[in-house]
Image 1 (tube, rainbow, N blue to C red):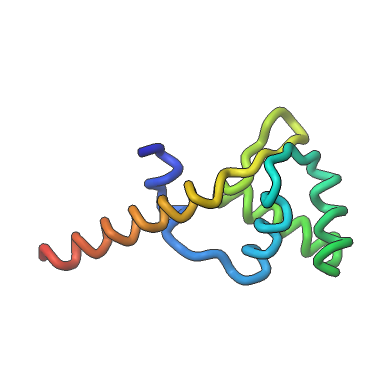
Image 2 (image 1 turned 90 degrees about the vertical axis):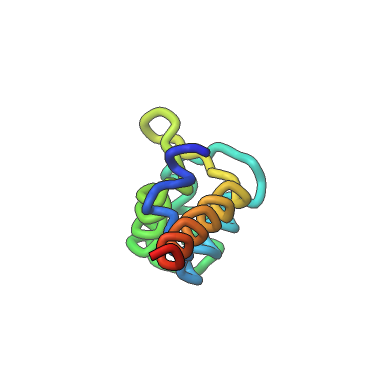
Length: 99
């Protein structure tokens, strides 16, 4: 189990807009330049540049996008994210049931 998978950051589901942005950016394995990712979201999700920037920042903070170098981003796999959510949920449920 990785630190990211067991971290508190993966203890909640993504909001719809963030999930769609994550899907659009990560459906194909690829490294994104931050500017390219923002433009891609602006063009494909019809959001403003500010909203696209906030989405990318949120995905980075949640560790679903990781920085590679200064301006490049790489996606964390969806399966890894779901496994992290499952581990977090099961751990919290087991603590409640045992007490």
